[in-house]
Length: 382
Length: 135
Ligand SMILES: CC(C)(COP(=O)(O)OP(=O)(O)OC[C@H]1O[C@@H](n2cnc3c(N)ncnc32)[C@H](O)[C@@H]1OP(=O)(O)O)[C@@H](O)C(=O)NCCC(=O)NCCS
Ligand SMILES: [Zn+2]
Image 1 (cartoon, rainbow over the protein chains, first blue to last red):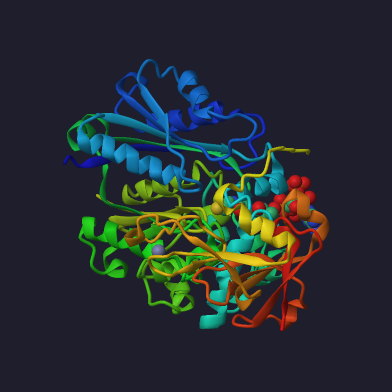
Image 2: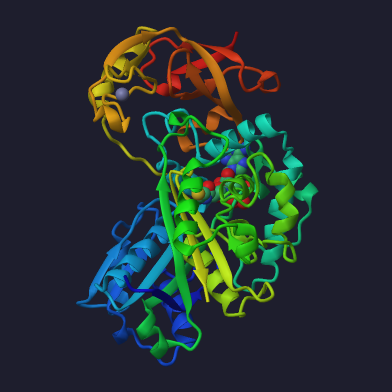
């Protein structure tokens, strides 16, 4: 099978972007990506793969996007997999190129959440829980993640302060990201004093409600040479799944699907020891607790030892995590977020990140949908 | 901002579970092949080796173990008036899965592994109409 190259990445500022429609945001991100190429034009793209999550005001929004970009009569389709849609769309884009079905693919992810504001956005996201069971008792996603964290705290003794350190790390990383949404330096006390959403998660332990778009352009290794002198290669990919309802699992304190997905990706990429062989990572911190649990499930440290890894995840640590600010700092326009995580790793490996890890040559992207119901891990290298 | 979706119930083959709530009885389903008991109920067993075997209804004792819990400061529209709301995952005795439900308890008394009993409100027909208390 053919090697897949990332040849360009682009994104909009993440924020409440009330003055732009989704298709205008996607255009902004696409123009950002095209700028860095050797004159790639829309005509050169044969397939468009799209990702967004909330089907409420507009459904089949991908049709507006393909139409607006003038992508006709070429192949285009949406990939939906909850919060992991953008990552699954990448998985699909890679398989198109590997198989030879496509030569150059545009992957576009976006979300406009300011349309609903945070309370209604939470309601719409919560509809991704089982409507007759967990949704019916009043759960939102934060409740499910809160229960996972409570169980982890019960077994391994973390305190709320421990999770807060991750929120502080990520939000303060975002201050260096001009495209990030979070603009204020915070402390552990700020996190602890913020309003309760679902114990132990408070407002500042949670990802942001955002508008934004992110794109990636992918091609075969051969084609990549014509588009850029500095491609990044997809070395490993893994998707693994778990039950939809948290209660249907045996293990609720961690993400078994993350362990499976990462081992698949590591095997494909030939990674044996992630901490020594990977230089930087973007982890899907929809809640800071997920980042801690994922240190363990990704094999960065042993189960129950996540707290001890937090300092290693700082810039300057052994394996920096969420240099972009993550979903808590950069922002979380759901359909765009995984695409933006990959974009950050793309820029890291090219030495172009706003929060650069010295000499980064191999990076990891983790993202997921549901309560870890569909987990994606990707390994990227130079 | 208002957002109203109207639809009919979609109980399908697990209707006996919801009908049971009205009679203050808790039902689960058991796979005849692997003998796992599911609550929330499933009409077919998801264990790959059971090849979607159709399950059988069994009545469960409304008691179990609290696997985890949380205290909500935000919920969906229909439940905002009930905040702060405590939710828990309850593994009903004998089951291999847990049911998410409301807890009517003092939050500070909660600990993973606590024994709980499931209670039914008058005329219960949905998950929101049952709750658990510490025993
Ligand atoms: C945590 C979070 C709710 C904070 O949102 P915020 O806008 O910064 O916080 P606010 O204090 O403004 O409150 C949020 C909403 O709750 C409402 N609210 C606040 N206190 C409330 C209360 N006691 N009861 C009911 N509603 C309340 C507010 O009115 C606001 O609703 P609105 O925006 O629709 O008017 C939000 O950032 C969030 O939901 N993050 C997680 C997003 C998510 O789950 N993404 C997907 C993960 S996979
Ligand atoms: Zn079975």
